[in-house]
Image (cartoon, rainbow, N blue to C red; front, side, top):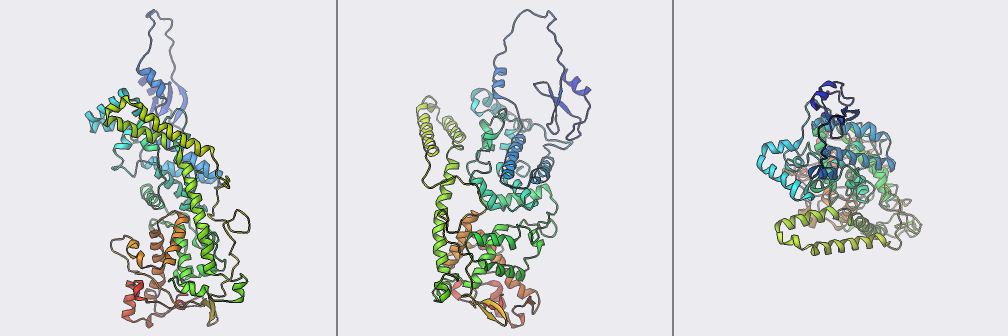
Length: 590
């Protein structure tokens, strides 16, 4: 009867233009290709006038359990709701309205088509039958146990088993919670929003974008139970490196074209992004022209270096880490950061220094270190509140079920489990009802620190300070007073692994502290900043070695390659450790 009704209805689907209709248990027509539900319903023939039997039958057992279990849905439907809620949260925070409809939705449709879950004439059917075909006996035993013995393991979605069994084999086509953040980040980069990856992860950690508790916002008929929790319930937010790597994998899987150009007027460009980070770490505004000067010298003003192109530039830049590396290199040019020069300059007495008009690195370090400690305490407290309650319910359920399966004798001892649940609920209730003194609920901000004379600020503002004590005029051009520059080994390692742990003991403490400061702001590991600093320094020195014998750019003095001996050229390319104390004149770099 159902097959005949389906064959008679030959109207193409409005979403994917396919003619492949199915009928749900409620009698509604849905497209088997894209799972689009339409208003048409199956006509029900009234057979009450037929005297078939006067006996009244009662429906029991499985139909009652199926009604309690709710609507059967697919995993991609759940991720679609999560992506929608994450996009709505970004729109509420001020992202352009076109971000959701014009960028994120086409990327999501492209993913569904590439993974053959929708918008295709050859869709991937119910994954549950694929698992039974390959592992018949094991899958049947598992299905019988999930549906009969333990209702806690039953899954509301129809394709959960495939997501769990083939996750490693088809990791690019199967979506995960981490991939939702990668997809959101790609949409932000495409739309050229002023949100970096570190900003996105910080909003997620602070709870402004649903992630850890995103499953709680799913509709009522889409219950996350049993093995669904292994897919939708996550315990931690992924790292900066993990999401960036996942985004690059998605770009290759989706085969995306070249992104819109990141020009100098775009807020993602290092020229403008470095200005924001200079303000956030309370450095003088006069440093920004020197950062732009360094950008021009290294050729990083070119927008092609910051725009993803599968042919010309097939790597996705880490915009925030790159801008921080440029600031660190600029500070090395001015203060050397060798644990000696920077403090010697800070002790130089002058009238402007006594009046507070000239920037002093020692004073900046004291103010910044105190603010950094307070910011760390605020972050720990905020993340503790976000992680305190929503993760526990499914986590405790999975742990208890696994423990009971290994120890059957514990099934008749529920007091131990109840005691643990009661203790956890009491701790969560105390955290929710208590409010620390001095802590106010403020909206999200693009800045980590707040500088000024207000009571709630992190310290006095040093943005207006001048750099007169660390610059001088040579050959009618302003150059840094410091005439030395050091750098570690610049030769690329063939293993493409970071050697930060190996050389950390030989690096100056002031340089390490500066990297840790930006690592805290971006929530990344210090080795990420270290590698990006090396990348900028390679562009500085490789420019003089491989781009001509002599060069002059906008009045900036450059080193002529004819003055470099073969031995010095070998040292320059291979690098050196701090024990050799080999330094290069700063005035030749800028």
